[in-house]
Image (cartoon, rainbow, N blue to C red; front, side, top):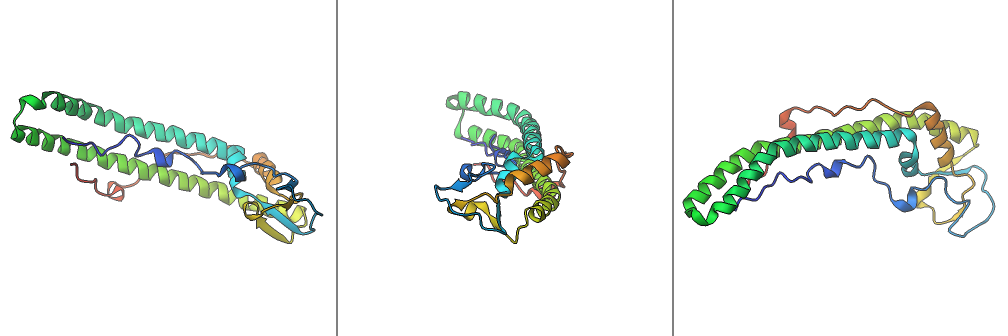
Length: 208
């Protein structure tokens, strides 16, 4: 029997604005992380970009907007495949009354109907992913000056990724201050689904 490849989960990969490991998403970090204390090391600072993207207001807004656009695109694809699903169900129900040649002919016809739905699903997935990438780039462009400003204010001489540190005194963690600075500057950005030419979505897989 024909198996539908235009899965309802095709768009799921693009639903999350920025994946964040739970261990790295806390902002700010504990002062003595990992139970390891010690003195504050002047000029040595740290930052978790993952935590900034997880907690900044503009990122939270962007994440929700991407989810909304994803849901809209998924609804569009689902509406296109709903009548095909109904025809597939009808074919399964009538299969015992049909000859093998009749079943193959109807499967082929359904495959032809399903093909453009697969193309649309893949195109929407790519458009949502492009939208997410563009949103990340826009926020990153606003974020870098915030990082530089807080870095200078704290008198930092070196900046490390907080997620790579095993422990120690995290008093010079810039994450919270960067989030606050970004929140003060920006809470939303305009986000519309990117539109790609049909050829950019690629060809659908062959129904079986």
